[in-house]
Length: 183
Length: 111
Figure 1 (spheres, helix red, strand yellow):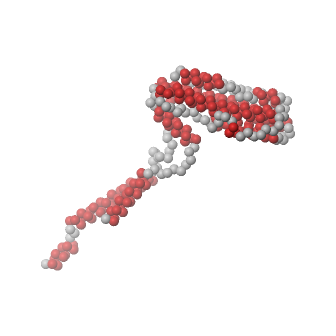
Figure 2 (tube, each protein chain N blue to C red):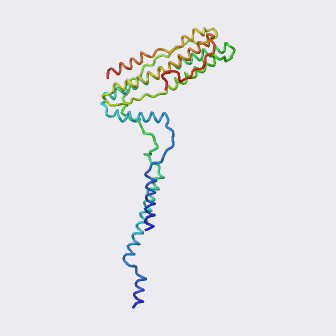
Figure 3 (spheres, each protein chain N blue to C red):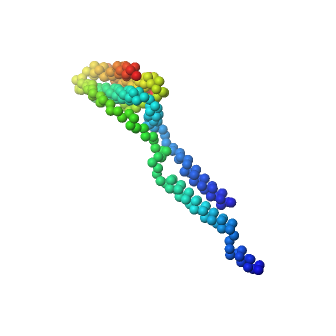
């Protein structure tokens, strides 16, 4: 009887070991979030009519195109701002004044914000075919908010460089969180 | 007579004991098979592993899209030692993006 119990215990242990999936201790990366969103989108969009599926595909491409193009434009602006600041610092004998330091801080901040925006992937959060317009507009609003935030950082950087170049005094470094629109 | 009976008991197993022996051998064979099966399953890499991220690139959205016409990038004048920096920094203003959002929303209104 004891042997039978032991055998049953062994079988149950092996079954438990095999059937329970191993716990994976890994942090959730942005890629995981995007993959989860893509998965949800692909599952839901299958139930939509082919015409609406095509509309969503076309709009997603247009949104991605706008984001890419506008971010590239912003990158060009940032490179130009950087060239101006470098030239100004060169004219000052390479000395980094407080104003130049502040301007460079915002230049770097804006550049990083734009890079981050460029890497964003926009995926519809679908809530039923009858809500297709709302879902599409929500995604456009999301793009608008985030792209405008990236643009506002470029404008902020420009204003600091402008003050530095025009010989303005040092500006107090502003907390990045005070800029509206970021997340 | 008693001695003969004792010998019979000693050298021939009763039917029940034979059955039990048969059952035990069977149980051992089944147990070995089960252990072998689980060992094989555990140590063989499965293509349908739970740790993999779901494959999302399906062919549902594979319709060819018209390639967008490349727009020329804004070219800004080079900066030199004679450049008026105050004037140039004013030019480094990002364009207004509102027309793009309007185009996208117009697209949605056609849904």
